[in-house]
Image (cartoon, rainbow, N blue to C red; front, side):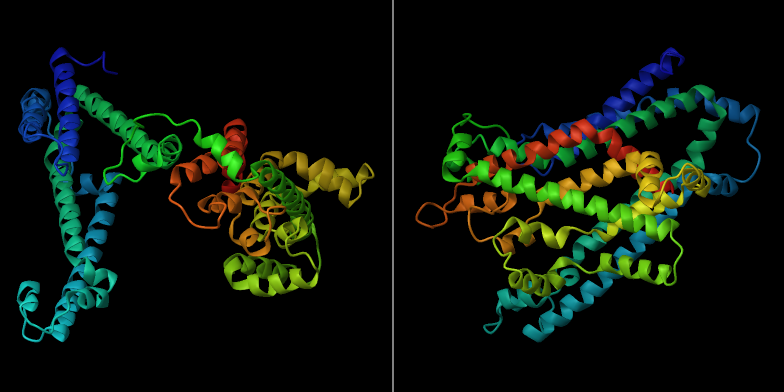
Length: 459
């Protein structure tokens, strides 16, 4: 697409892309005190690189508009654009932010008058001897405490909507009249998509990067007021120290056993229940399925007391059984598998019956092979949930013999004397060791996860 552009438009595209890159870089540097005064020179340089090529880029489109004007009203053409709906949504969000700003402003001044009668600002309130600023800030709610931010964000969104609206009104007709300018805007769109994707990836992976880098730092470097993105010196001894302080091999064995048992239980019970709810014919089927879906809305923090009492009466506290028994059934997996089984035509089941298959044979030889991607996805999600489970294993395990790895990492905060220390570098090393199996599992089976989730969503 870039090669099909004329020479002047190629230069203009390169200049504007570099200008936008400099503009973003300058906006990132502005809040940083470490950058020098040269950062302020980037703003006019970026503006010049964006604005100077505009006459050359728009010249052909303006000429063609004069010879062959576009039909229809500008308003109608703007409403036909899918981008117009996005602008309407952003306008609605800005209005909500302005409502929050007004509510927070009123609440802030009302609270100020209660703590400092007659004061119209915080500076005047500080002059009163009975005014306690800490109590004033503690009494403010979230909206009132940061109401100026809602106003500024709303103004920024409205300004962006205004700029985009003016662009659609005056620039879009020029773009539509020039084929080469349309290709140039296509390049802008592709670059913006890649930039957004890279930004999302960086934001998503930065916590993992920070965890790995922190595991290779000294404790003093990790606790500095100004964090470092790269260690001054790599301390590989943090990993052997973790293995010495805690029985990680035992944690891994406990986690592996309980996770595999939970995964097998959720898969077996989920497949059987999904078959009954999708292909079964009995009274109250829909009511029972609604009760299963209702279980999705009840968090474990609400039900863990009766579950804990039940496990205690079964003498399963501080055992493997106590960890995996309450997690042998998943309402979410039943729902997900039911939706996939319902998409399988009943003619396949009838054909299986003609071949002499019973219910279990139909499930094993007909439904499961046809829903293989979803079954693999469910098993992977179940394994990840069991491996990362923290709340229930923390409640039910009491000794090193039954603790899982998520609970074991938390134990690294204690020394042999039972005192807490600031060994966050070793804690990070333990966390890295804990996530390695999950990362490898995801990298190997990611295509099955994507396929299964997309099929479940479509069905």
